[in-house]
Image (cartoon, rainbow, N blue to C red; front, side, top):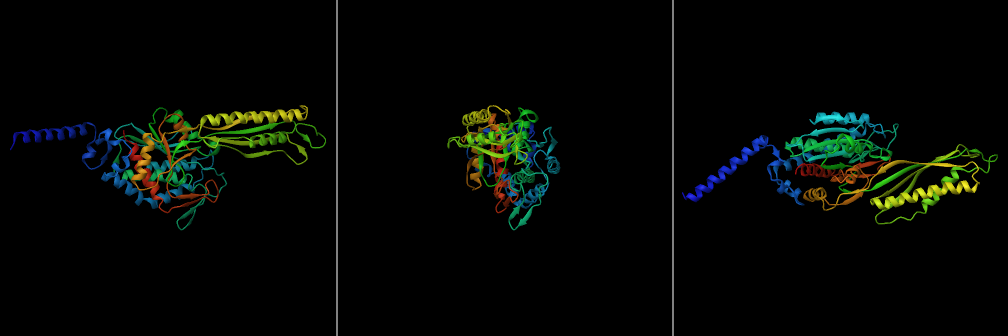
Length: 442
């Protein structure tokens, strides 16, 4: 045999044994026994916009993605089961306890409920970092007395919150099951979370607590599953919400005529807000959503109030709109007082009840490219969107974050007649599973 060939064979043999020894030193013995460890490939080979297609070439990843599809019936059962546990604003505890039990049953580690009410469970990787946080929100917009029974009509599910966000909660559980069934061990650790306070006046209190306290300084990547379809939200629409209260002495509509009237001041303020001019691009919006006040038709009110919502994906536009809002309310107060020569002088309180910072994850960032890549690799259409979700907080902090839809097709979100069409809903479950694998590596 040619000596050069012998030397080459010897070198190759030494290389193989060196690599195996290195794997053993890194605690990757499971890789030799058939489980999938993402760490076995060089980090440089794991990056890039074609990561989805590359991952699908691995048998274990394919098995996990297939498990997500095969498991869809259970995912839908979870969706219904969770939705029939009430989770009204600020009262998510009952559903949170059910979710924590589901985490434990799936073998997650360190399952716990933080001070704000978020439910967390960890699936350790071969290493602590990168640390991926994978979430859906527990709360709904519906009050305590709401009938949350889910009705089934063929492929349709009907019930309050069935799509937003019972679908996301169920998909998170399905991702965990798929990873377990395919025996996938990721390089990095994944913390799965059910957050509280995503809706309405909850003001993202759950995810704010995660980054302020529970997981402060520990999150490398963040994914929220929220809504239906297959969109990818990478622009966080910021919002400011106020409760404005005009107050005065009040009195009889005839006997005390001539007093400044809080309801009239409210009308003046709403008229001014209604005349705001805002840019179409970036899209900037305003809305007086609720009003109230007064005691009777023949009384000058002692109080009136309104709740105002203002939104934009552009922080500067939102700031400008906010300044105009304050000017409008102050001017309305002054005009009503002057109209009646400051008789029964009014005051106003402008209480900030919601502050969601705007944010953006660049379309060419690694996390967005990964979300796009896995979507394409599975043959699904790509849609880059903007919205207001839990991802607003990490986006505003410069932490890579996206929100993905959970599959299926939803209608009438936030309405009592909310519906979810389960046709091909497994598309969302598969996409979420593949994205979790893609992001839990260097």
